[in-house]
Amino acid sequence: MPQGKPAGVRCVQLDAANACRLFGLPGRPAVCVSLQPEPAMCGSDAAQALVWLQQLETRTQPPPTPGGLPRIAGKSPHP
Ligand code: SF4
Image 1 (cartoon, rainbow, N blue to C red):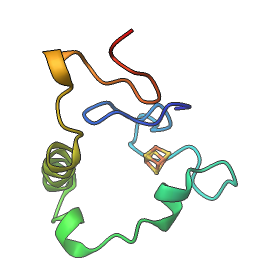
Image 2: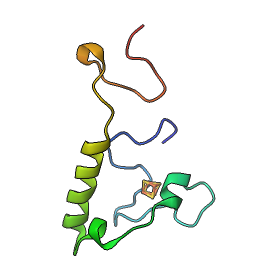
Image 3: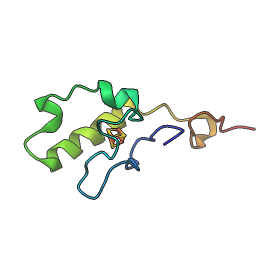
Image 4: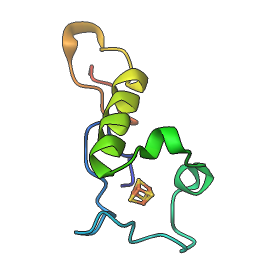
């Protein structure tokens, strides 16, 4: 995803089994390579992991733009 993965959007690199298609490849984003998973983020099953991810994305999303226009990575919402 050249402009980065927006919060709440499924990564295009996930396959049908929720495995990363780039795992182990040099093109995998640095932020993904550097992520160190821990039990709290994985939970005991996929449902708990998805809840944790959603909470993380909600807590780290950028503040709303003036006028409420959507923020697009690398672009100003205003002309
Ligand atoms: S590890 Fe990164 S590139 Fe791979 S599926 Fe997850 S977000 Fe996408």
